[in-house]
Length: 267
Image (cartoon, rainbow, N blue to C red; front, side):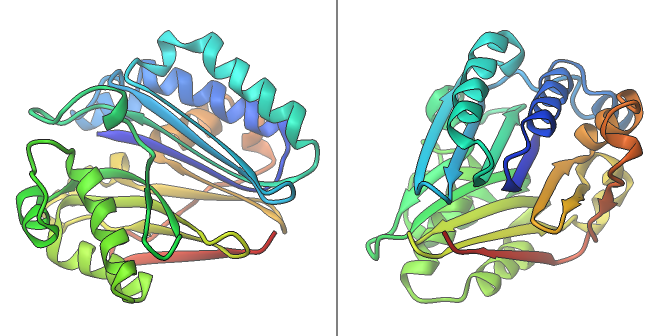
């Protein structure tokens, strides 16, 4: 499975650096994953999507390598973002991957995935969990062998947006009808002058014993800045690194059943 990090708001370099340092460490050694009997680490690729709302610019990086084998690359990217961002409003979505058995590997299969609808809406998608891949692939008529289940879920969202379906409805369809284990996701819809972000949290009941692994947490840094993160990352930031963020910014767990949060931004 995977780990997700979403940062939305004024760029705070000290917080962003700390979060990515923790993400690298969790990708290499995931305490919550080990205790849950799921993943010891997340070596199967990583990616980052950056959107500067003030300057209306963006950056995307994806790799099939582990983030902990690309320390210098990650830090170089953050230095570029930091030099460019200043105090700008921005969105940063990062993901580290531990591929499910039989799923394709490589840079193109790392998250976040991006899609462009015929109406010009850019959809950016990252996912932790598993969906019924073949069932979804049949609906949107793609070959399930060529794509990951997460990629197909993102394609489904873009497909439904083109048909005019409301995003919350589409996400709830995915949670209700197509989720195999968990649907912990971030979807960014970039329409240029309007940015919508949706965060979902849903765990199938028979996997409730793994809630500590799958759960997402939210940190409200200030009135303008919010962070979402997977449980392992929240644990690392708030337990192992308690001298830093932990004492200042408590993490709130998201509900685990059909939960959708929306953030709407304008440049």
